[in-house]
Every structure is written in structure tokens, then in C-alpha cells.
Amino acid sequence: MIFLILLLLFLTSCVSGTFVVNVAQTSYQAEENQNITLEWTFSSRRKTSLRSISIICEMLTETRTYVLFHLLRGVESPESQDPEFSGRVQWDKDVLTEGRLTLHVSRLRANDSGKYECEILVRPDGSNSRRCWLNVTAAAELQTQRPTECPQLHWWRDILICIVVAFIITSLLNFFTAFCVFGVPPTRCSYVPVDSLITKERDTV
View 1 (tube, rainbow, N blue to C red):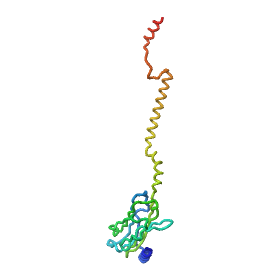
View 2: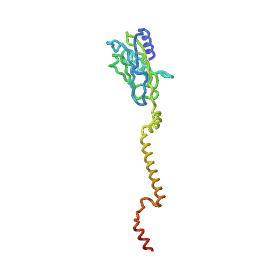
View 3: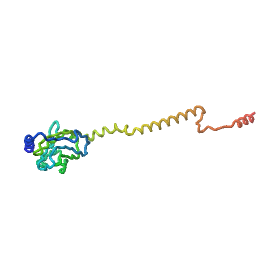
View 4: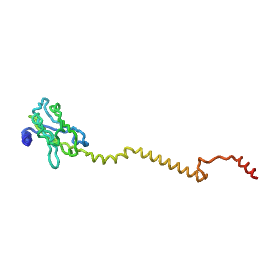
């Protein structure tokens, strides 16, 4: 693997510097266990054969470097790939000769966060490299963030609860007010005609 990397670097120093490589995005954001596509573009002639293309893509961290993808003269070299990415990286062969490098990384992990750099060599056009950043949010962090988002998503429930509580308090206040004024609950109050009261007074006399 080291020999292949040194060979690619040697070939890089032997070609012109007019070759241009760009990234589709400078940064990517994803969640753990999701899939993502990283893309680079490079200038090439219309008739570029696959055998004229050599690529090495790496993930750079503070502690070490991981080989993500290695292509030597159009042939993928899986033995150069770091075990951390084994079976998780796919590439589109059809669009590579058109000047596009697309890497599909599946089942993302939290430790996949870092800088991703691809060195692309197309003989005899030249070589160059560009890097992008990927930030993968861990599942544990997502669980801690979700409770803080719930009150914002269900604010209408708080309003409904306030209305119900206000209605209950108002009803209780009306009940106790009626009880204090009439001496009995308003539902038990009965209407007594004035004529009947006068008749009862006469009978008692």
C-alpha cells in the first residue's frame, strides 16, 4: 500500500499544475447510520479512458489517516482500503470518465467525522487535490436534543391545557359565588310565587 501511495505521489510531481479539482460541497452534515454521497469534479478531456485515471481518497484526523478509496490506473485496490471503511464505500464508474468522482459511504459512524481529501491524477492532463469536511452526529446526541424540541413542536397542547384549567377555575368560582349569595347551590334554588306567601301569612293569622 505504501508503495502505491508513493508511486501516485511521484506521478503527481511529474505532471503539469493546470489540472483543476473541485468539491461539490465544502462540508457535509449527516446522522449516525445514514448514507451519504461525497462528490469531486475534475477537468479532463472528452475522451478520457479509465486506465488513465488514478485516485487516492483519505480521511484525515488529528491522530491518523485512513484510506477511504484507492484507484490505480482505473482498477480499484481494495487491499489499500482501511478496515474502518471496508464494505461501506461504493463508487460510480460510469461518471468517472466524465470528470466526476462520487463516493457513496453507507452506515455512517460517529468516528467518520473528519476531513476527506481526494488526490486525482489523469495522465497526461495533470493532478490536483481538494478536501471537504464531514460531521456525523451520534445517536446519543440526537436523543438529548429531541426533548428540547418537543415543547416547540407541541406548543398548541400547552394552550389547550391553559384553556381547560381556566374554564374549570371559572366554573368553581361561579359555583361558590352562587352558594355564598343564595345559601344553596344554584341548581337547587326554586322560585316561590309572592301570592302563595301572602296566603300563608293570612292562614297563620
